[in-house]
Image (cartoon, rainbow, N blue to C red; front, side):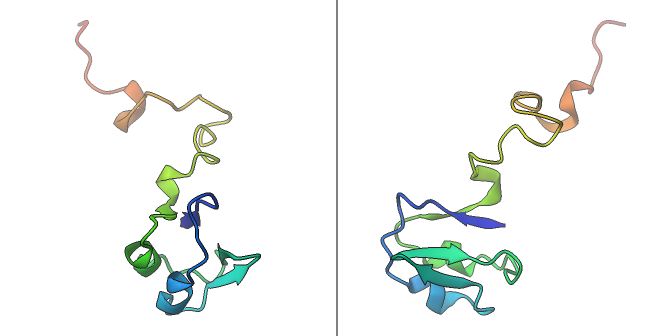
Length: 88
């Protein structure tokens, strides 16, 4: 799911026009994404000249909340550290 960095959004409306689902609207001069309508096509990410629309993987509000709490999944990478053993 894409998200919008409110500090970078200049309210140009290019993303509103690019969205094929009408999932983006303006409120108080900033773009808002209706996640229930968003089909994750990426057109808004491509059109945003300010790089204000980012993929969910870069959302700082969601980091560290996948496995029960803040920071519990940081630094584990793919496989969560249970990969090759070298201590046999």
